[in-house]
Image (cartoon, rainbow, N blue to C red; front, side):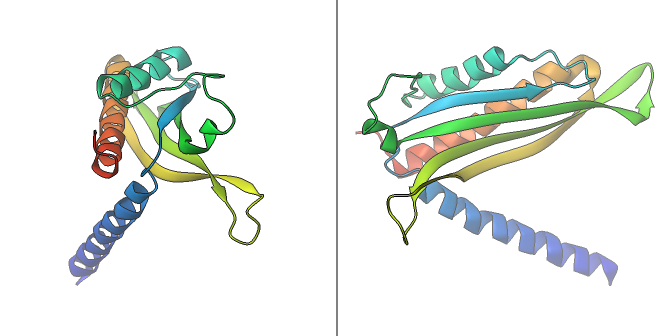
Length: 172
């Protein structure tokens, strides 16, 4: 009986994600391009990723796919309305509780968020920054493979964003 409840919960979760994904995709329609912002907190871990490296990885994936990437000051204030910010957050720690001292394990929690300004319906003069699209995950790996594993996970997240962006903004 316990197994069937767990199966039901997993099925409900997958259905919920599929519905949310369609809603999130719709928020990408009409976005003219992206700014990329990164925050890496490697804490006590051996993760060897830096903000600039992650930013370059994400920007290169977008540019390679033909998705416009903007830099600070590139757009006028009026054009900013159709642009969005991709914020990448990585929080990595070494598992000291269960770690084998010879092969410590890294736990890296990452987010790739698309943030946009939304106008409030009740007062259209108010702009509210909000996350409209998100991929998050947890990478658990041996410390010696940490940097490559986290970069691959972020690459997959960026590819998911590009796929969703292209679905609602086909090339002309």
